[in-house]
Amino acid sequence: QVHLVETGGGSVQAGGSLRLSCASSGSSVSRTCMGWFRQGQNNERAWVARIDSDGVTTRTIASAKGRFTISRDNAKNTVSLQMNSLMPEDTGIYFCAAAESLDDGSCSGKTTVREFAYWGQGTQVTVSS
Image (cartoon, rainbow, N blue to C red; front, side, top):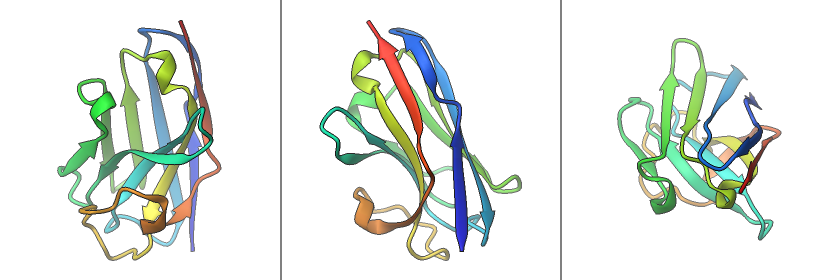
């Protein structure tokens, strides 16, 4: 079993920054593709960023490129999302997730909730204009 806990959310003005952290416990996710999702205004949980187990191969949604950076520290069992130049459109509940197969380190093709089996409780991010 994998237990994920997100922290770092809050309320900021447009242009500000937040750093989200996801701490994992239980079964190791050091070999697992990890992702960040956002449940925004449309109330649908959508992919924001993902990172392979190698800690190098990453992707973010187009709207976040150049502003969001995903990283991980496998030794500490943590995954982070640095969010800069925040916009009101970034508002939502951010969830950390681990891929269904804990031995699958590749995030290739994983862009929906269906590819992720383990989820945190979410942390609220609110960006005001």
